[in-house]
Amino acid sequence: KDIKIFSPATVANVSCGFDVLGFCLDTVGDEMLIRKTENKGIFITKIEGYDLPLKTEDNVAGVSALALYEDAKPNCGFEIEIYKKIKPGSGIGSSSASASGAVYAINELLGKPYNKTQLTRFAMKGEALASGSEHADNIAPALFGGFTLVKSTTPLDILQLPTPSELYATIIHPQIEVKTSEARAILPNHIPLKDAITQWSNVGSLVHALHINDYELLGKTLNDVIVEPYRSQLIPSFDAVKKAAISIGALGCGISGSGPSIFALSKGQKMATRVENTIHDVYSKTGIDFYTFTCKIN
Ligand code: HSE
Image (cartoon, rainbow, N blue to C red; front, side):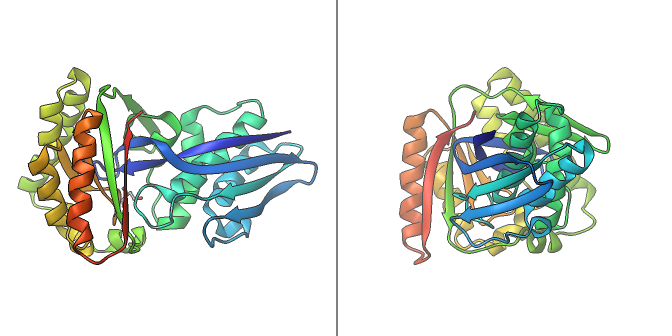
């Protein structure tokens, strides 16, 4: 028995919600094939697309699958084939796509003994291997879809937030690698109270905007005074992209996860296409290889 799945890319943080907010990119993601075997254990048998470790304990999908496997103790094993489309280190949840895809598929093959929150817990083990931190803000939207908020990690509590129906995300991925562990290491341990106030006001307003379908308010909340000032320095022309996206009509723009990808949100596909064309023009002048795409948030 086997199962083929699509595991989506995701945008974590969504500017103001470091380590708690995230949303799912509907059409971009990895494909995985998971097969039940008589041999007990978790085996990564094939990885196409990018050069990643085949050893189970060194692979984020392997480690996540193992966490589930050791808990479920099934009387079988699993082989995992990964067809990687999301570039590792691109900032759109590459490791979490592998981690959440593996646990989702194995759960299906076992007859769904675990709910999505429990699956998130297993997949966080893979995220820890990739970045040194067990955050769930990419895994939760990959497993639940749409916008999610990680209310807490101990105990794990994930909230699904409503997604306005005309909301589109445009991503630009500069082809440089920013390691999440390094992008976390540059962040301060302490923050000024006035910045914390601005940030939690934005997070609360963002959640409110999603609930009342207020696109304009949503745009105003995409403001990160804590993390972006540090991480934007790792992303060439970040300020120019953000300025151009907003001046052409994007609701807002920020760093996707730990970067280097940048996301912009727009109301409607037509505006999203204009935003994509605009940031494409801006980045063409940098001489850095990049690609862009736009998709609906679902
Ligand atoms: N919240 C995480 C971070 C997402 O920004 O470091 C990256 O995986």
